Image (cartoon, rainbow, N blue to C red; front, side, top):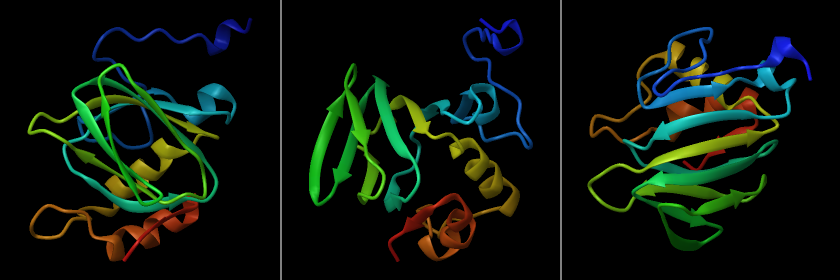
Length: 152
């Protein structure tokens, strides 16, 4: 076991990154922490994520609190607390809040890199429409280098 790679985070702690991410995103394991194999984040879904596809990474989500709406390949699912979903690369999906209380999830990306995309989004500035929804036209140029594409 490599002691240099050991990480211990207490409740509410997060891994530092290139830029500070907004509070709903807490990076627990960065891509470089796992030699590229995965990244792990605790996420509170305060906004719905529009339909998109990952061309490189599988996305795995474990719901810690609340209920998560998952639109996967044309099918809508409600994923309650304590449940897990695997969203394989190459298949379009979207995520949403099912109730007023935003769900809190653990999100794993394999291979890693999701936190790098979020850092790029943070650096780019606002990527939402006036109503607070995400704008695919604004997201896609930032997402493309990470193998992600949003439906426009």
